[in-house]
Image 1 (cartoon, rainbow, N blue to C red):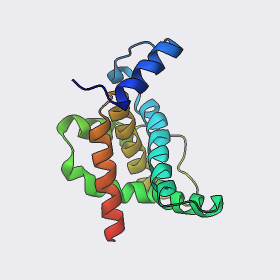
Image 2 (image 1 turned 90 degrees about the horizontal axis):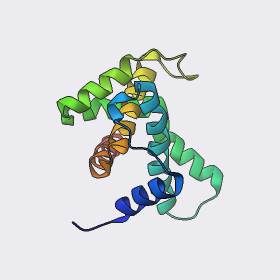
Image 3 (image 1 turned 60 degrees about the vertical axis):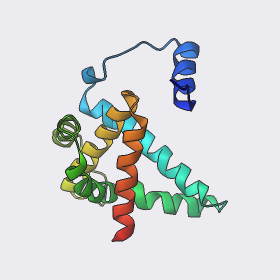
Image 4 (image 1 turned 45 degrees about the vertical axis):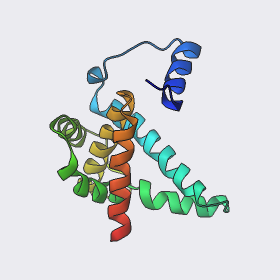
Length: 147
């Protein structure tokens, strides 16, 4: 098997930080959403930055269009038909988890659906299913761009 950048990243994270192997199924849905939020943000920022050098305010504005709960909620509506049963279970656990309160200017429904989306992204990231994670993100982004 060819060792790619994913393998190197995993290897160095474990080697340099002495990270333990943990069963991703032991994480709470909100812990999955916590890391999923960060990973999704990194993916979107990477895509926005790849479009060319721009003032930081413009980069932030473009990024915000994708990372806000309402956009994640719209993406999740499209993605549900593409999910495996295991992915649906993770999404539902995230969506149904007890959160403190929705973000300002977001409906409770959008916020909960976005939490489920972030939990799914976090789950796939921690399982090192990077390709699947990115495929779902691309489908979601493409669905937003068609609206």
